[in-house]
Image (cartoon, rainbow, N blue to C red; front, side, top):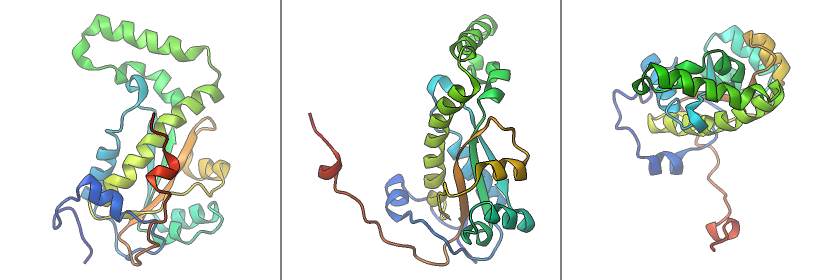
Length: 208
């Protein structure tokens, strides 16, 4: 049996970052659904500007749908091989239709109404594409949190941008305006993956 959150100590953030690998072959057993829910809960704690929270998830565990998703991902085998695939996207139009949900309930009714209207005004003069790009920047943060949340509970992932967005929208019944942060096969590793090869801090940083 693979590791689950009920049998292993959650990894520290440092451990999660250092042991994360992009994994393409997974142990062939279903995801623990409690762990899956917890990983999504942790990812949803990622910060967003003005607490807009435009990130949405679709979790695909159905084998036939995973196979179709694999075809839409240029036949990359990890999409079908993983026990679950999490599709991460931003939906700013859903946010705009439900702005009040994002305002802290502790503010009181009048403040909630005023703040919600202010948030709407920030975005109504942008077109759908502009709002979409702004929301995508927020969803990308959540995408990173999702990888670390998974690793923290003993699971592995493979962040992917190699897919055909229009086909994925069609397969999952998503509206045309949504923007994808990526798709993420998830499960327990059946291979170790490649060791990290990264630039040094000195190579990529200017201290001023």
